[in-house]
Length: 457
Image 1 (cartoon, rainbow, N blue to C red):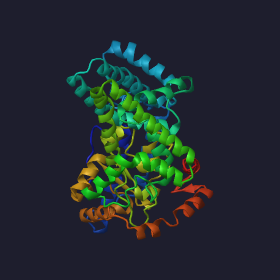
Image 2: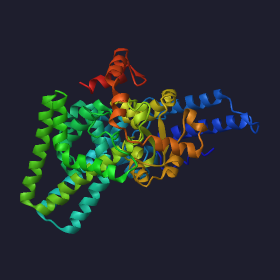
Image 3: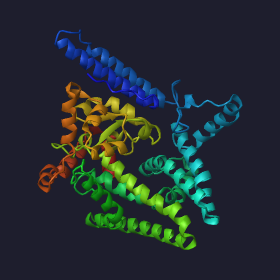
Image 4: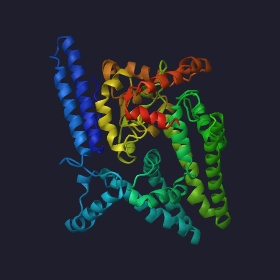
């Protein structure tokens, strides 16, 4: 049985989860071998014990009272791997971390303040200077710098909009200010991510009324992909307010239209001042970000179950990879995020292991060593061989052959007809209402079910 490779650059939490899954895959292989008389099967209790130890270790990484606790200071390195000369560590790094932990909401999240300070001290001065003294070498450097920043920034903003901020109450002024300063520089119009993602996407969950839904497209077809990206790029300005009007949320329609309009007026005003600087500082990042977000969303929701497409377990995926989880605040744990949109980013791995039985019963998909961008690329190439190699089987999937994995993934990229949608989504609202009234939504209870109500309000 194939065992997924491990990338040494994975976060500590990803290493722990992937090792646990590998142990389960190996145990399943031994069971299969034992059934054919070639090996003694491993006891299920041994695998359970290993999983419980992994959960305890993950909890300790997030528990400030534990000796294993780690603060995230920078996305590129775990805290223990930041090695500076002794004087710099003693007089710079440690005092900064101690102070920063009083600024952020959770002691794990020093990285948020680190990124805010980095962006305000590099992106903003660079952009201002381009309007003062434009040069093409500087403009190209600025564009490349923003391209490197935009992924981490967007997922930091993602945490901000889901949790009404990332900093402590004493720094609420900064918490409210930095998105409005930095959003245009990173390719976002003011508040558009909040209105589209929180007030729309998480309400609809890739269903028929989701403007970014993938279900009406053949997810391994280039023409369909270009139509999907093109619709968002050119029509979201009109589509989102119209969506809110259809849902009788006129206040949100007005707010989303106003914020988008003000952002475009701001871009127009700066273009009158210096068109070349505006192109590099605002327009190129805007187009780049909107294309990138649709490429990412395509990858996140490319594999949609043909039987139960309205299940969060079956309409989104989990990635154990380097770009999404190390540099973008565990964005690879997308199913966990849809199950509870306000779950803290550091809690996704341990939540996954604790709920692994629900993931297995829900026939969720887990992949490793591939990010959302490359999933989209491989789908356009129809390279199901590579995608199947990246699959980390859980539950009954561990017994699938490579060809069966390929067939499974291919089946989940099929376009849904309107008849399919009417049949498979007809009872969604009624079923979800019943689940919420019982305190359950997609296999979750308590606060997770509550969050579904919160973002549907």
